[in-house]
Image (cartoon, rainbow, N blue to C red):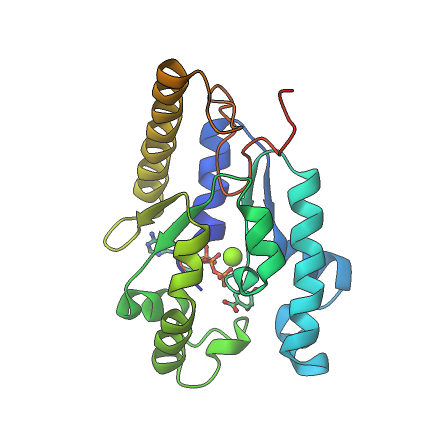
Length: 194
Ligand SMILES: Nc1ncnc2c1ncn2[C@@H]1O[C@H](COP(=O)(O)OP(=O)(O)OP(=O)(O)O)[C@@H](O)[C@H]1O
Ligand SMILES: O=C(O)C1=C[C@@H](O)[C@@H](O)[C@H](O)C1
Ligand SMILES: [Mg+2]
């Protein structure tokens, strides 16, 4: 949470010439209320149900870069869906995360004791982020433009490796190595390219 998914996702989409979409923004637009209001009105589990629908819709509809909410990966069905996409995990150290998010009331899970909350959330979630990640991009000490540069390099490397695999084995395990629309969610869906 607060690692820069939305900030870097937008930059990355610009640099790739792709569309950008953000599931938190989709939720706010569809619900007509802020995420903090949804948490206060209905609680976290209701928010997670809304978020799950928003993420599944965006994954089905969107072809560019998709920024997810920080807790979207808590849902097992969502994690399974992400397996068909190129997913970048933007990592961050707790001290810098707290500086970035501060006491921002827009993030209800960090409203009280943000340092402790952020650390506990990360400890509980890190294995899930790692499970869905195609690659990790560390963001500590990098300004957003540098994170986007690093993400582009990581994506180029993924495409190179897929090409090598294709040349060596005539197969890329169902992924098309020439699709450049890489990002949080833009890999070809299962069945594409057939
Ligand atoms: N690399 C960076 N260096 C410094 N500040 C950053 C960096 N990336 C993002 N920020 C700042 O940190 C804050 C959080 O960024 P952002 O909203 O993009 O995070 P997020 O991962 O989308 O958060 P959430 O999980 O709540 O959606 C913003 O104020 C943003 O300007
Ligand atoms: O990490 C989280 O659980 C969250 C992150 C944000 O993107 C929002 O989806 C919401 O504040 C919850
Ligand atoms: Mg965001």
